[in-house]
Image 1 (cartoon, one colour):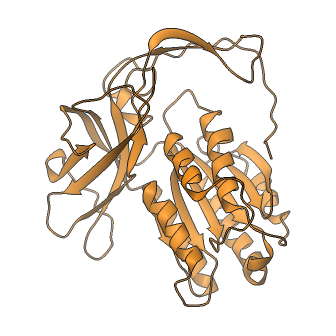
Image 2 (cartoon, one colour):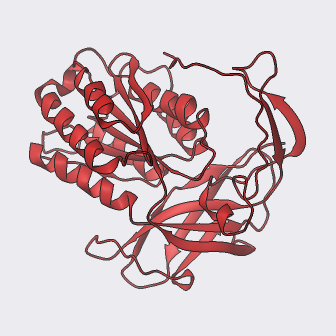
Length: 330
């Protein structure tokens, strides 16, 4: 399935400084996590066969990472300084920390991916209500945006990016459960076709929230491919399990793996009311993040995967961030 959208001819010139066009070092700390590469070469988009869309890249070696810190009780720590944590990029300390700050008010760009397969039928209506309540509390008009995808054997985007709660509400409630599950395809395509293609001209926080039991029996893409695409799109993935067996099943481990690889978190609510609590925890986390911008010690625009390790230097603090990124390729 490919999401459809109107493509307007345009000419866009994007010069990446840090990870987006900026006029000052402070501005450059907020965007994409992978360094940009390049040679001032003009390229054309696949969606623009006549070559109307031109992008110019300028090489800079800068990585930007969002992360959260919690204490031993799991509560968010909101007063970290630059001296309270360490960073390793591909197992080496960065050559310089460019910027660090707590980031609580960047616009949100969210993708809500709802499992509409037959296996979630018994809890489906409650999950829809919890999801729409979350969107109502989280999406601020004229500031944040979200889209909705329902998936069973296939993916269907019932609402493109919007800040209109009424449209999001009906997009969730028009979904009906039944059929198999193509979880990995839904993640892969949402990241590629929405977050990679629909790049805003301002810094944002990008996240996907999956509501699913984690069982996949229909996907064309693999779990590894879904994770890689999320990392390339620099999307944090949160997952809320719909399994209510009380056991740790294979699907739960799948959700946990996907979330951890992208710097997100998986939730395993046992009772229906706990689903609402899970959404509330995600909302709180999205407003409790830090951003750090740094230069890798030995960056090379070779297209390979580079690991990121952020560790707390303070006792009893835990730091969570995405596990790595893909360097651009010249």
